[in-house]
Amino acid sequence: MQFVEVEPTFWVANLIGQHDIARQARSIRVPPVRYEAMREGLNRVRAFAQEHQASVHMPRIGAGLAGGDWTVIERIVQEELTDQGVPVTVYDLPGQNEVRPPALRGPDAASS
Image 1 (spheres, rainbow, N blue to C red):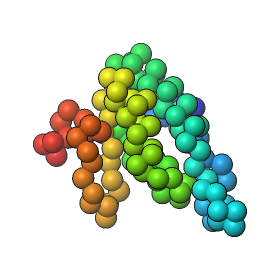
Image 2 (image 1 turned 90 degrees about the horizontal axis):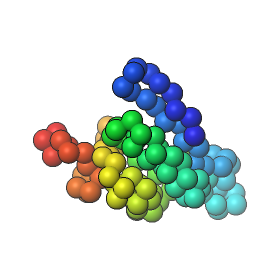
Image 3 (image 1 turned 180 degrees about the vertical axis):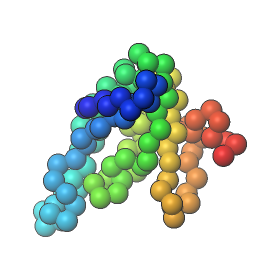
Image 4 (image 1 turned 30 degrees about the vertical axis):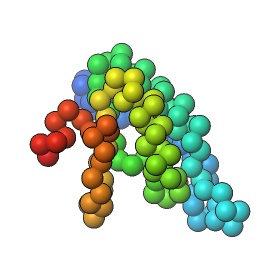
């Protein structure tokens, strides 16, 4: 984990949650995503967010080139962050129109 301060109230968390890249890993049929590494990283994000009274905003981490299953990752996000009181908003990139479940929306996401 690496936390980078962009502004006094804006931080970026860099989480390494995969080993290798998808195109190289296909030959052995193991997706590069490492769910336990993601869980450990999100646990650290939770501690940081709670210490700084911050919310978390992120894309669907691990579900793109890392080959992860979003339903598994979403459950990890819920267990490590939202169930522990950290507000989370998950953003879809342009062209991805699936609506996020209410549990993973921020308090003002319903108005957007």
